Image (cartoon, rainbow, N blue to C red):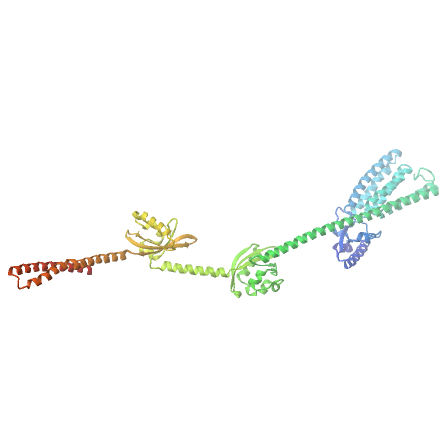
Length: 589
């Protein structure tokens, strides 16, 4: 029910209340009969400078209102002014009243009727006093009707009954048409009739100089004709005002109907675009990989997409129009609970991770506050969390293996050869502290005369197709000792950098032991050669001389010579055995 009519029922005079009550009943019945009925607000005539809905009549507009209800606006309804007509008419009347006032002084110059001319100013004072004193009423318009009649009487008197002055009544009647209120003709008509009857009677019967007309006598027939013509003119002017108001109202109704149709078309377009936007938003929210839900200021769920159904195992039917914390009561006072409330309270988006114990899942959550409530995007990151935990565990195992290894290990940058990490065994082996190592490169632990060999060895090692490369090199400790090191290294990613991890084995003692074994082997080879060549020569001679020595056919001199040869061979064999004994003692050592 329109608020404007309720305002009329409370604040306006009785005739306006009856009109508003009638219109309300028409609207209620029409609204029940025609669901598509629209309301058209027509402002009531007011005297103030502004029009507002509080002083408006609601006229029901339907597509058939012009054709089926041509008599909707009747003579019994309240005076209506459409969109500033009253103001425009008032401005026009102001101009004519000023002209009337000046005409009074012009007419006074003919017969010296200056007092009557000044009386015209009094008429203006009466009109404007009523208009200012009662701005909320249209009473000043009825006063204006009488004032225009008085100006006619003033001009007739000033011109001593000149018959043409009677036409000022018709001019005033025509001016009143602009208000589009036929009732305004009545006060002026009544005044003119009384003026003609009274002054005509005084002039004809009492022969008083009232200056009603220049002819000294109006016969009854002429008087009646004048009266009838006056009434006809006022009736015509009133009818014109009525029809002008009626057709103007119909035009306004048609204009408003067209405006409403245009607004309906625009609204239909906007509704269509809004529907398409909502559908597009729904499609996007349903197709994104993240789960999404929205709540209003009271934490009532207004949207819940399919991914949210899968992730939180709650259907859309279970969640829509329900309080979020009544469904997930176990999450009250959780990290998510406090983050959501902080986002709404501070009007600032939040991004965080939270563990949901009932489902044993981890979620990455982003919440965005708005005037409507809170929009929440989240996704299941449980697998990522497990992978991250496994990576951390792997890194911890690497760290344990690296730092607790008994062999020296280090990580170097492949480009700068700078040490990035070293284990405790490296610190012990080389004598540098960890802080010193982190400021050094591989070149700092190599002898200065061996840098070219190091670069060549590294280049050869990098060119190998195997993942793990090996080289043997000489390193120098902080004290200056040289170490024979066997290095094995492989590609390694350290803190996002391409590096190389190396494990070193000290080969110094092993090489000394190998050299000793090789020397012993050389001695054993000498003993073996002596056994196979040096020992055999004297032994063969001894073995050949003994059979000859025991031959009975030999002479004493021959035996003596053989014995001398045996002594020489025996001494030579003894010397060889002594040399072998000495070599054997060196091998044992």
